[in-house]
Amino acid sequence: MDHSSLDHTNSMTVGYVPGDSEVFEPASDELAVLSSFERFAFRVTHRMNLGRWKRFWTWCQSVFGAGWIHISTYNLMQVYGLENVEAIDHERPVVLVANHRSFFDMYVVSTTLFRRTKWRKQLFFPVRGRFYYQSVAGMFVNLIMGWWSMYPPFFVTGKNPVPEKRVFDKYSLRRLAQLCREGAGNVIGFHPEGTRNKNDDPYSYLRPQPGLGKLIKEANP
Image (cartoon, rainbow, N blue to C red):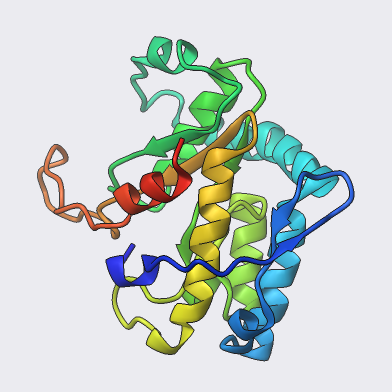
């Protein structure tokens, strides 16, 4: 994430959704900077990441999503270090940080967690708002690949940022910090490199982008 997209704001709107703890909702001025389609895409995806809807999509992700990814990759992977994940406190959220070599990186990692660990979990992958929240095709990819877990969106990130949407990004940071602070089994996935590393050396890394440390500070775990 671009550091500028994670500026802190002290304003906060709290909404209540039946069946959930208090959930931070965007203020009207934060939603106002989005286009009508972006607001629609956000509202749908936001609702799909709450309560019974989130539990339903997590079940789909753990059965169907993890199933086909496992079939596609099981003979290509070597898995080690899961004992470290099992040893953490599963009553608190987990920040999952991974390098980024392909579009499927986080899916493969999440599939391993779903199939090889037993504790309750639900996944959230913050993404660039462009594409996933700006087109029907983006929403469709979020559904069939992420089961709506590509959430919340950030617009002032990476190449071609949209600075006029910085106000909404402040809301996304508050919401993301809440997910990192509250909710047993919340797994928040990050690629700090910010984009796919296309170097020939698979053990090379791109320079990490700022933002993760800011989030941890905001979450105040």
